Image (cartoon, rainbow, N blue to C red; front, side, top):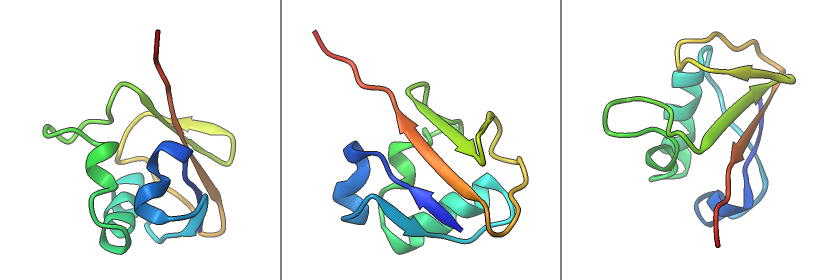
Length: 85
């Protein structure tokens, strides 16, 4: 499926749109990390939880759990909040 990568994570994928596979959000992120080592850790913490500044949207619906199922042919958008002063 198509995955849109935020600019802050493009140093891993080297582009804003990539393909990945997985029947759940967790499986898709593992596949992304296999293809682009280190990218998963930027989104998932040491306890296996979605980091507070990351949001995932699948076909327009926000995903809040890694176990949420995904269907083939959909689009996942990764959104990373930015902060500053």
